[in-house]
Image (cartoon, rainbow, N blue to C red; front, side, top):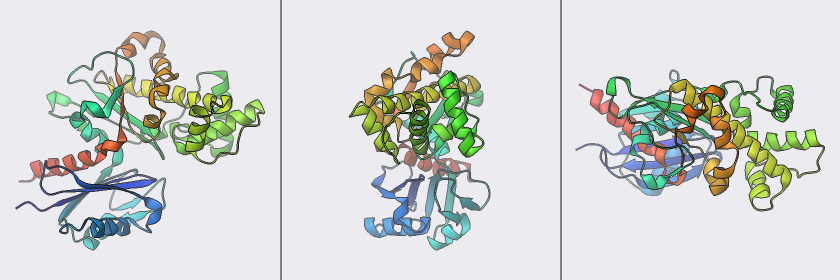
Length: 326
């Protein structure tokens, strides 16, 4: 009998957890818990297992919003740090796999149901072509799937594309990037394309335009001002956010040759709803000069995060490890 499996998607704000009774089985007891409610990853997992009252799992796979190099993991956008070996021992696991959260989400892409996707522009995906993935949330995750030699469901890419340098396309964007550079030194794509980045864009535009605006500290405040109160400054910041995202997504699509489509994950874009579809995202995605037509055909999809897609990717990581076992 196969042991039950524990699955986790660990972001900078929340941790999503579930368990499987068997490989390829349904995900059970999906829960979302704020990371700040727990002093450590082990404490969060232990609390979850106490809540759902299932037999202790013997294997687990975690996707985490962080590079995974070696045993020690220190989160970029949260205070948690841990030894994979120590977590495995503390939870009594026979096997633990830890991968980047967007690598996990990339693994899930071929399995996503159509109802979890909303297309934004483009036409049809080319079967077997590379797929691009990026998503702003607490940080900016970037990954993709490639299909060398017709490889089945694809090979995921594990990188840190969220930390590439951010390029301005307009004079106003140049001024905003200059303000961010004064504050941070290096201005990565994540500096603008994240929750904190949206707040920074709002305050930068407020400063440049010498506008009153509001004192905001959370991205949800900016989106509420824009979409509910139609505040011009917030709408400007949100559209700049979408424009930057379009440029970065277009760069990624060109780099990977992503004729298989571009998927948008993370927690921010899905909350923008249909407004996102008429934002500057798609225009900027295609605005690559001689390669406009190349990009115009590429479909983009917004992923519904309520379906906990990255958890399916962590399960697939365990499946792949099983397949590789002698």
